[in-house]
Image (tube, rainbow, N blue to C red; front, side, top):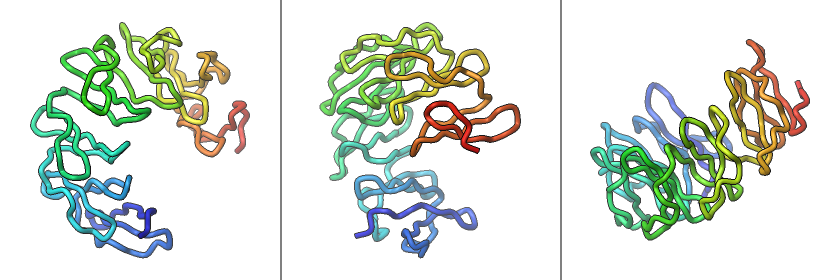
Length: 229
């Protein structure tokens, strides 16, 4: 079974191609996410469900929103509440959250009212609802917002980088993009700024490089912050 199908769009419909760019699943969906853990979330007539890699419906179109599977669970929304399903169609963590993120490192960020915290696979809160916003963990750290500023916590919920950034993102390849004022830069896992905020736009690092924007020019930098081209 091909595990590398890629979603593509044609004439406002989405389907899937294989690595040879050959159509495998015809474009018939209103939207389609890429496959993860053998299933893909797809949208038809404002409802989301899941298909397998032959295009067969595995989980019916029950949901108002749905995301990719991660660690065996997928976040879904019905009405105004989010919960989590498994691949057997079971709602293993009931619809109860005002927002929910994807699982990573065995925990997921959730929001109830105006506060965010983290739950485990059983739905138990393992890091209390104490943040204004919270992102999924990556590389053992997670970005959280406290009093309008962003910092980072570890898996025990301890603040390891004090919140003083205007925006922050997940770690990728050991670094994370952060924003101070109107400019983006990068920090390491110790919270040290090692590429100074100087970019109008900045992407996460992938394969040792990141796209950045200086004024109106798009460039690429390496992990030392040097321009590659």
